[in-house]
Image (cartoon, rainbow, N blue to C red):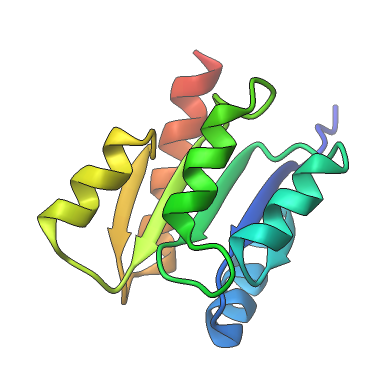
Length: 128
């Protein structure tokens, strides 16, 4: 029996990060990439659903934190797993994101394999 791929939404303003993550995850996930939180929110508001979201903290137009706040405010997306990426290794930013409902916070540069394991772990917890 073939199961459909889970949908992974990647939000990052850095083209190289988007390309690397899209390439890395495309064999196991249907990957959608956007360059900022507003684009991602627009995509979700069109009725699309993501099984998990990876969002950069600092982006133009709408940063990851504002996107996270708006995502959690919508009942249909409030429980969607979200992992935040950031170059900032400051405890205060990590705490701020986790308080707003991020499921994890990963500091750049990162290993895509580590991100993959963290995504799988959070998806397994959601499914349980």
